[in-house]
Image (cartoon, helix red, strand yellow):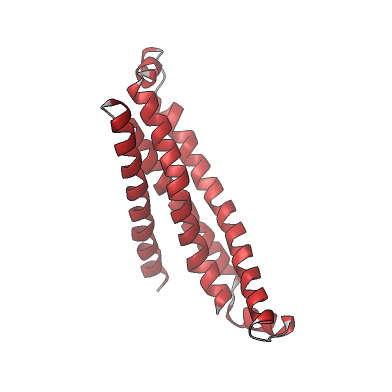
Length: 168
C-alpha cells in the first residue's frame, strides 16, 4: 500500500511543492529582475519575442525535469518504506516485495509522472508570469516571487484534485 501511495500521491505532490518553492521562486526572481532592469524591453527592441525566448525553454524544462526528480523521490520513498518495514516491522524483504506487488501497478508510476509533468508546467508558468509582470524595483521582485510560489503551490493542489477526479 505504501508503494502505491508513494507512486501516485506523495512522490509527485511533495516533490512538486518542494520544487515550487525552489524553481518557481528562482524563475520569478530572475525574470522579475530582468523586467525591472529593462532587459526584457531590450529583447523586444532586438525583435526577440520574450515569451518564446524566456518562457518556453523554462516551461519545457519544467515539463521534462519535474518527472525525473519525482521518479527519484518515488525511488527514495519506496526504499525508505522498505527500510522501515525490515527494521521496525520485522518484515522480510520478500514479504515487502510481495506486498509491493500486491498493490503496485506499473501504470501508477506513469500516472505519478504525468502528474509531475503537469505540476512542472504549472510551477514554471506561474514563475514566468509573475516574473514578467514585475513592477516596482526590488520590492516588486520580492512580492512577485512570493506570489509565484503561492500560485505554484495552489496550482499543484488544484491539479492534484483534478487528476484524482480523473482517476476515480
